[in-house]
Image (cartoon, rainbow, N blue to C red; front, side, top):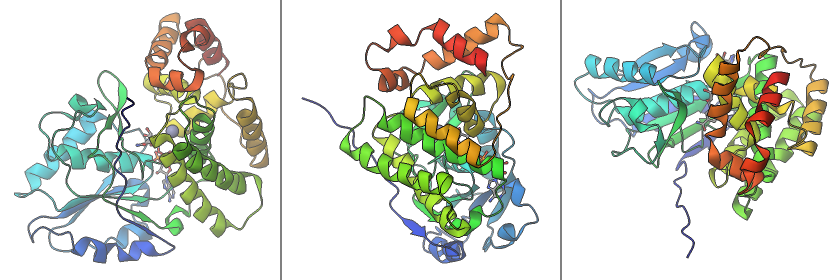
Length: 359
Ligand code: NAD
Ligand code: ZN
């Protein structure tokens, strides 16, 4: 008999321009006591900006600015948890992450680690978290990763880049306010949005595809096409990309990502290349695996005058290539989704090396 996975979903979501203004009312109902603060982790790109001043601090609530220059690391999560524990006698009422995938993942991980002993690195993997996280809220300010709906928080640990995948990871509340994505730099808008587009291609072209994933994947794909290939007004485009991200994330919940993500993890692990741009760098050379998807991707790049950097891997040693290849090949479910049970016949180390060499 098949055993199906029973997934948690984000139980509450508010959507609409200006909806961030309601966060104070939403949180009020969740405050555990006057001494149990809400901690807002916000991308430091908002330091001195209007958004930071709209955070409704009451009692002993606190804002912590976090840089998203680098993707979240396990030691960073552990340090934040230590700091919060040292600053307060009581566990917080909740953690609110405001920013892109980096801040959303940081907030999820901190919420988990406040109630679980040890280092976050011990929980990288599947279903290793023992205790429920504290209440956590996600407020995306850039769209594409799907981190606002996902059951994982991707961390760079001492040994690997891997998510804490657990039933306690998803947010308890998400605030989708498309206005907050105003001001995202154009290139970044493209790279992070392409993360969503690539989620769709990998899910829809994968062998794990099922009606659940397909229904979300097709909708997300349609929205991405509207955003990146048509000429629609900017506010409509922000709305649509935010919902594309949501649906793209839902689509991979019940399937998997594929070749681009596997290779991009290798790049990120060795060179620290960030997720969105890393996916684009890789996807650019994947016609063989995703002919239609890559063709449309070229069209999107052309329409938005995006030029990808080149020569990223040109000075790497053989040993470094091997490290990237090993990281990529270790992500077996991704390859199996992309190529089926016999994936090892196609995804050989030589094949991967030849793709990396082009980047
Ligand atoms: P990001 O969070 O790193 O943000 C990208 C850049 O955009 C940063 O420089 C940030 O300061 C800036 N930015 C964000 N909002 C802005 C705004 N409104 N105005 C101006 N600048 C703004 O990038 P991302 O692509 O959203 O996230 C990447 C991260 O997400 C990676 O760490 C990746 O591992 C993770 N991720 C997680 C999941 C998941 O399911 N948990 C899925 C995909 C990716
Ligand atoms: Zn992704």
